[in-house]
Length: 245
Image (cartoon, rainbow, N blue to C red):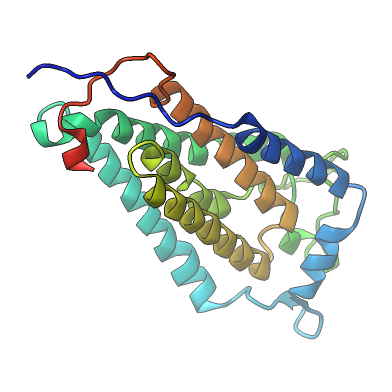
């Protein structure tokens, strides 16, 4: 079957896709000069029980954390299966690049978390003496106090599970703009809900989750630009793509 040129991607506005995340990052750095993280954490802490109000919540831990994470993992696994299948099944070949971009985005947007946690060694709220733990609080850009148990709480892993779905926005961006906008809202809301749930449990500070959203967005943007973005005049192979997606 003869190939046909793919239309150029919709233009990327750097003031939006890079400017807004940069502004948020600067705001987060300035946030280091305030006690907003501790203030919000204290709102979720019950001094009478000496625990965070969601620390033992079945819904927050078993449903919103464990089961919800498994659902997002399933999305990634299905994308991987579809990508692998695109090398053997004609039905999936027209969307191979989209599936590959989705797999790459989700792998990077979740895979970066653990190495960065180990590098930064930021303590979780529930580990701090302020909230019944034994560790000393330090802000992100401050030196870490001596400890036998380095923290593993920055950036937020569960927040990344939600915000990694920014990848769906970019996957649909050129083919289905309205669907893409819906996917953006879905990912933003899901990541926010996951973030709030973990904050109520004492697992993360507010800034941890916002940083995670910025990182996930930039990772998904980079994967889109590398794999799917087509400048005017670029050629690719459309095939029957519009019938598949």
